[in-house]
Length: 54
Image (cartoon, rainbow, N blue to C red; front, side, top):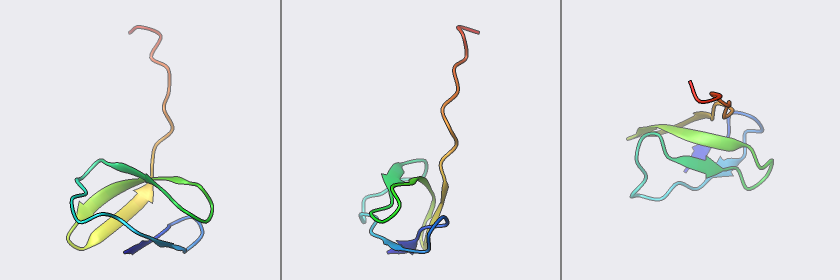
């Protein structure tokens, strides 16, 4: 379990989670990136930006 950095809700992260995995907050729906696995640390996932083929 970890806390959502947006709304402070409890977010369940599986024991098989890996760094960089994206999970969603069940309360606010924010996309969160797993930054650490032991202990679990979450951060708001960066928004996907178009690279226009560069």
